[in-house]
Length: 71
Image 1 (cartoon, rainbow, N blue to C red):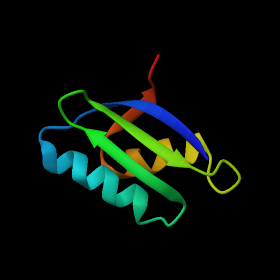
Image 2: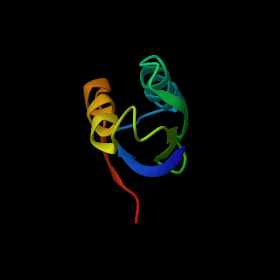
Image 3: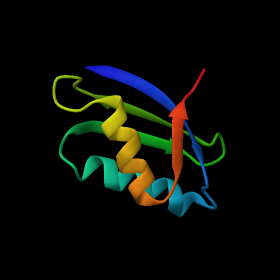
């Protein structure tokens, strides 16, 4: 399993964070997603053989937010 942290832009409330988590986990290709509204970040655990970081970012964008790797 691989874990990444992504900086999220465009969240307005904790419901936004729950939407991101739900959309990622609903794919069935992400083990877990923990989005923190206050920190404007998400931590995603996934199998790199099943889904790529780029696909994760794309799912977040389709949800209505922007995401980029956290440095």
